[in-house]
Image 1 (cartoon, rainbow, N blue to C red):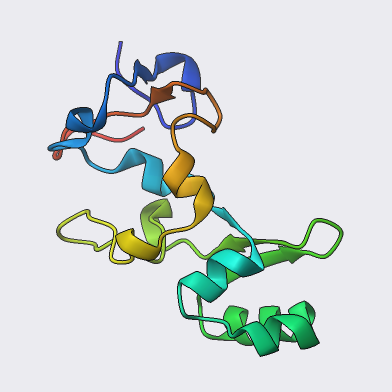
Image 2: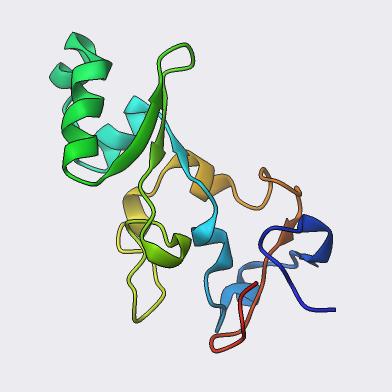
Length: 130
């Protein structure tokens, strides 16, 4: 059975960071929830901007193609995705995170948290994604 990003039941047990070697970065095609603190760490929002109005910050970040949506009751943003569902911060050729050192908390915690905790959508580069 092949791995499908949309079917967590097909994902493989995460056995450690070495599993990421040669992977197509399937986890980076999942929607990424971020907080204002994540966006500040990424350097795309200032603390002052966050304290004044998250809605205004959302409008600017949306216009710049960094975030797709904002949910005021939770204060969470969803990062923009490119064609093929790639995270806006995923390098299209190397398939590596361009903001790895400052990546959002949800990315730091994956796969401990996610659609299927403890599992990842591991695919080798060049495999067909479904």
